[in-house]
Image (tube, rainbow, N blue to C red; front, side, top):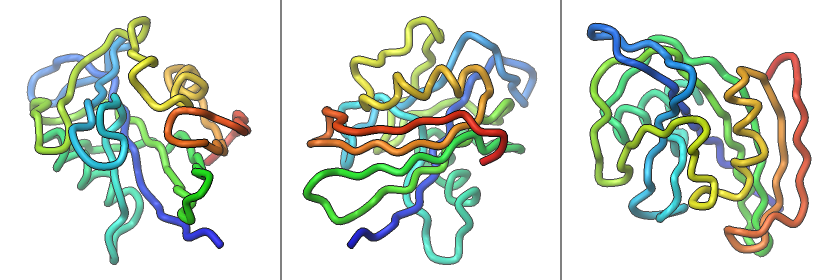
Length: 166
């Protein structure tokens, strides 16, 4: 049987504006994962939900810990369940986007933030599923998905659908 581990992932697309920064279509902030699960891959910011936290609270906390940024408003845009053959945990990932943020992206022990133009997103250095759902995220569409992996690089089964609400 699977255990369901909730986590939140935040993707930021931004530009400078006083102390609060506003989204700039055409750029996305990703982090190079430096250690642990997914090390060596570019990813959004996020992690596990701690006892007593909501998923959104966890997403905010992880964003601050991994990038030094805070956000006023998060928009939930996706929910993807991940299964890894031979592992008993089913990862339940809630994906958020933020239109504004406060602070300066700062490297942490876990992540090294870097801006990418949306036409230069490094999909070859990311999880294999990202290339499938990033276009929906960039178009501000909502989606549900399921990806089954063999190892950490090969997708053996998947479903992805655009939805009205998540």
